[in-house]
Image (cartoon, rainbow, N blue to C red; front, side, top):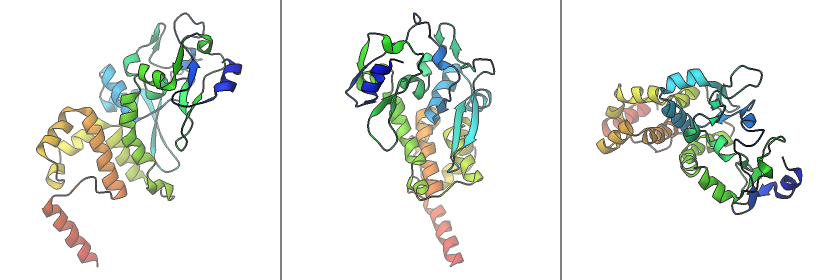
Length: 258
């Protein structure tokens, strides 16, 4: 990395400029994709597995490692190839084999948010990266648009509403059952879809027919619905409504415990 450049421009606003360009002509081309920890958001998984034509279960088993964060939140990491370089399984000699559906962090590189609590961005590239010596100049806003970040940011807002929920800020943690619930709804979407369409789910929850059709046909709609279901079940939010008869049963059960 150009140390003089990064020292001067390490923290950037949306409209600050930086120089970067990655292409096959660079001797370090593809090397930045080796031996890195790439945490995948649910939307990353949706795009990647749909792009290569796998079910969510097949993709998660073949290409990811599931971990648990301190709060009990399920974390999904891209599984690297077990070779000497710890290579990304999707990188070919001429570049990324899933470029149109590459993850958020790959799109953002070498710019990343300073933190979840601060505005601004940081340049975070490997010291060997020659892309910083290229002449192409961007503002952070221009870079995000060029890399197709907007739809990822939009879809990830609902994910952040779960992972940065007040529930966790107050020191609460998910038990294994709740962690599995979140994992299924947000990552293993094919399994979640079977769950809601092959059970009495829509007999219990008050969902309009038009909404059910959208969930059935549109995977982005299904993912957003999964977030709503998680917030309702994990945090008790009013993101889903029970049908009247189910609400009556719930109230009666509560009265019986009093």
